[in-house]
Image (cartoon, rainbow, N blue to C red; front, side, top):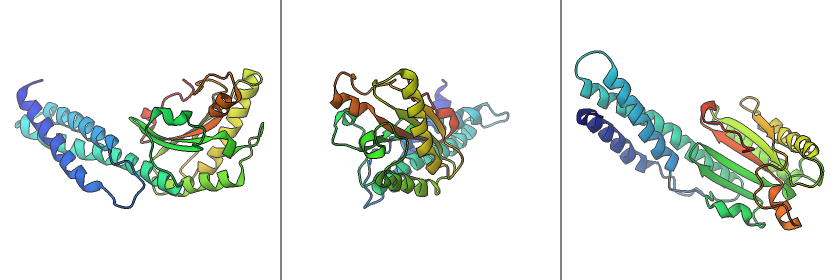
Length: 238
């Protein structure tokens, strides 16, 4: 990459990072890393600078700088929106944002909100959600899912995915149908901005080996995914 193109990319990215420091909101139960804001700004800066630089006309460096700043602002705003949603969801559910990959192995945690590069994930442990073999939500679980639905009304651009997971007791086909029904139950409540994408994962993608009751309880869960757009979606069962 030419030096004169690299300079406006760096300048625009740094500028948005400096602006990003103003986004902290005191009083939130939140993760202050705002990694999605930074990643979105950097990606947007590069894309915007390249578009500006390759546009016909003179002053390519100036156009690259302007394109980089605009791209960084847009990308940073999208990333910030996802960071903000993670913090608001955590607060609404009475928990914090926990990005520790080992948190899912703690049986005391019924709800885990975590940030990932392309999405925010809310994991609901099965014991608080459904009775054994049922796809009908328990009253307290319904209340919590409804809280997320009300929050999503403020973010109409967010794309929602829901996946159900079971242990390995019973056939794969039975568990696939059960996990799909459970995902659909949650999705019905979250369909405030359009129908969420749902998937039944049966006992794929186990958190822990299904060799005892403790581990099987860890694997029974429903996961809700919040994406900035459909292009960021991935298969939750893999």
